[in-house]
Length: 559
Ligand code: ARG
Image 1: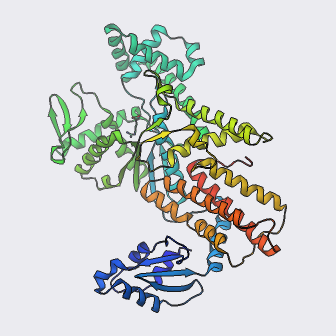
Image 2: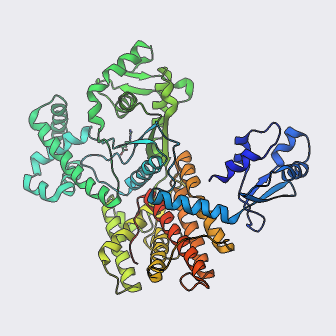
Image 3: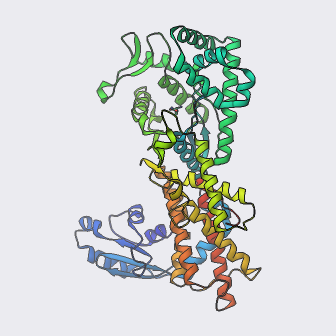
């Protein structure tokens, strides 16, 4: 049950809506005060009376029931105490019913959310800079799906641009089919880097010619282009698999080449297009922005033109209620311009376009790893973290079975969690040691807590599990945390912040560990108590696993 709405339904304050009351209800800083609390300060103005009076009136008129056992006014707050047994039964039975899909809701029924994330560039490195967009997008995809939305994951591939002409030119000169097949993305990237280092005027011209050939549909040029695209996709899909990331569409920039004209025509028709030094632009000066360039003076389209066509295509194809772009804040201006142009075209769905911006990720030992001009490949970061996890696990638990599998789950989880734990807009410095700290605010800590819960359940060895007793303090703190999960999922979706779920997981793991220290579980004083605590342990495991899975992180059997 959602207690905030339950309380709001029953609290009467003249001139204040139920929604407002529900929003104002908070968790008291000290659980000794109560389980929920309604601060009455902001109602004082409307009612022209003191918060103390309002709180007293609310408390006095609150109808007693079996759900809320007490409503007490204290200094302008109404503190509510819930009936612990009733509350606990509600929370635990919901978790048992929903299982791994705990936190499901009908909020998104009939609504579609498109999410543009990862959006890698063909033939270019898949580097640490792509970590956040990939895992943030992947997590938002799961979070919205959990809330009942139809989700469309889109990898807006960077598969258009001058790099392909350069690549073909370099390949023709220095490349070799077998070598490229074997070396994959790294071989392709090496060719591209070499072009940039060595190309002279003649090669640049040749590259331009190849780019033109690709566009005009030349078979040979396109065959090469497709091969480079295949190799890149095969490579990134391997990494997506490790990160548990999926997409519904790989429609990249080149997909929109034949879909731009109608949009350009509409811009023209609406009088929004003007000429500026030979280029076709939409003037945005009135909105304090530089012009949005639609066609260059040579008639070529731009990144923005393709994005414009993509937005229209997505609206037509998916009829989205929201379209999210999970892209670094460096592109703030680009998206502000794009959305403004669509708004100026009179499309009311411009308001449904959201740039989900995020900060930069760098490595703690970045200076060493990046060396001169060399990028840090995401794959290397993942592998290194998995190897470190393997070392740590070998030290902590030398007899562990399936070492490699566990190290993969722990190491990959640490990279993902490292990118998701902080509010997304913050720049983050990734540290292997911090990410793999068993006692930190880490996925490892949460995974370890799950492993602990599993081992408790294993030790119980088939003892009865279930039932309900009046929860004591440590038990009740944990149950309240478990009950707060659905709300955390809603909040994460509303703010596009998987960090809400990540923090939730750490907080709940801490509460479980407090319960574990305070309360004997398998050795409980009575069979009934043991059964109830085992039930609570299993519900915690379900909830923590559900939280981690929304982030794309798994739970090892043992650690
Ligand atoms: N490929 C682009 C980049 O690496 C990101 C594309 C983001 N999505 C979009 N629809 N513009 O910068």
